[in-house]
Image 1 (tube, rainbow, N blue to C red):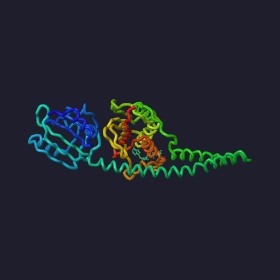
Image 2: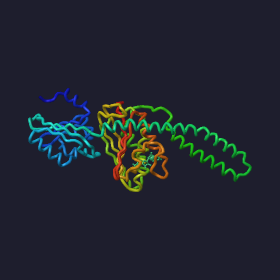
Image 3: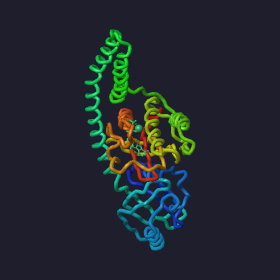
Image 4: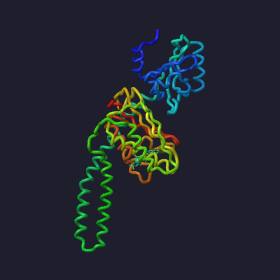
Length: 352
Ligand SMILES: Nc1ncnc2c1ncn2[C@@H]1O[C@H](COP(=O)(O)OP(=O)(O)OP(=O)(O)O)[C@@H](O)[C@H]1O
Ligand SMILES: [Mg+2]
């Protein structure tokens, strides 16, 4: 009996990716979790060859062929697969035979990502630790803010009383350095007002940031885009999102130096868990660069405040960005290796 609409929506609520293929290894069906895994929509995936959507080891390819021929189910654990254009993932696979509508042999693949549950647990613990570090820093910044204002005011008063013009050079230094410290303190404190949500066109935000980045990029750096036009407007704080994307893209430019490529990419994923809450739809905004990558010893720490790998950085950009996204119910993730660094901003799609 062919599946009914109800059966299919049931499959869409599974966390397991389900892919059905026919005897020519063409995809006949993908559920929502599989769309997320493959980074594509069901519309695009159906009729594609499985191996175009997903790079799989030769040994697995051979076993699938065999299973199509002999109709025997099989299980393969801890296999590394690479969805087209995405990072490799370790998965457990369960394959069972089925008959397609045309009564041809087919296989149903159930694909479970092995590291996703681990990542969710780690996300929660890490977010809590990062927030703790930020609140310590905010406390410290508050303590410095008031006396600093007093210090600057006193230097101004002193400057007016000085008998000798040359001495005012020293009071100017105090005022200038106090101002520099003040702006650092303000960044440490982060935004003080509450986020203001309104309907936001995410591509307008990405294009706005892309133009600013193009204006500041050296000639040898290309700034490209790859958008999924189906992303709907969402309720979020536009100004904060612009700031977040600018911080991330600014880092990419810095990492590239004089030459390289930055890609602004957008996708939608379904059934995604952020900090313990499962969302039916999440927008995935990515900034990908082909620079040297985040230094290995820093990769687990870059979202903490005051962690920097550069000589002139304050190490606040990513920490502020993560904090802003948390307030908006989202998350920033990073994967990095030399030649391929991806920062992913995940925003729950509360449809505007
Ligand atoms: N795209 C990237 N490629 C390589 N390294 C990166 C990238 N993005 C971030 N990093 C590393 O992460 C560190 C932390 O970034 P973050 O934006 O928090 O601070 P920063 O850029 O050093 O200082 P600032 O406060 O001025 O932003 C950077 O110093 C850099 O070492
Ligand atoms: Mg930065």
